[in-house]
View (tube, rainbow, N blue to C red):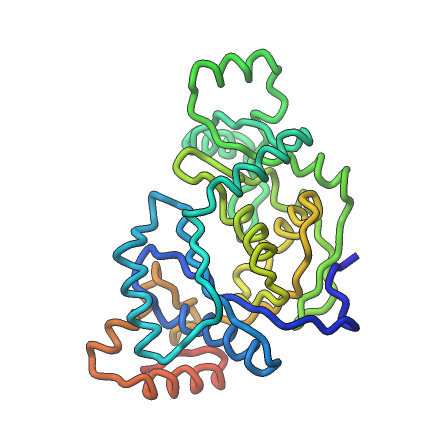
Length: 298
């Protein structure tokens, strides 16, 4: 059962949660505005969270300051204290300990190249927009082998056994405000990684814990994260966390219909500012794009 009762009419709380791995771009702007406007239209609050758990990607000091500069330029403001994920590693470690005690985690010693080779041997491997499904190589390693490798200090990640999760919780529901009632299938995307050496908690684990900690009632985010909600709903169930409502919005695209994102060369807000555009120019272009199936022109 969903834990948010529409009849209770709780205060609406949304969040904007960028990763400081580069300058903010127009896709970030869309996400920030969606979250801010959703809250404002309902008399609620919109929070800011810095998702800097991946120490290999996040250069937080440099990029967080640039992010604040971009947000000030645009006139976007957020409510309450800013949550910083890199300050919460102990919270994520506690959640991992809980899952481990429930028998839901196992160490995976496979390297990325080994996983690719295993998948190649499978021929037509299961695949989704979230990537290839891990074939479960380490799931049934003998306990003595696991302990010996851990004692030896072998590099490993911690994966969650989604079949055990599904046996425990079934297929819990969640609500998307654009697509209606959904049913999570925990096993759909395989045994995802919840932690590794360079990332003390994965996005999947941190996001559900932090949404609960911040009291987020409505998660507005891009439709590219729709499938990940199957994983997030399963984690909420096993960790006994509240379940927000979701609103997965469309994405900005180029003329060819390709998603605009940092890795796709989307223009940064700093570059638009340097080119002499005003915040109003950028907002007008964004509104034009939203009225044209997300096609961005500027």
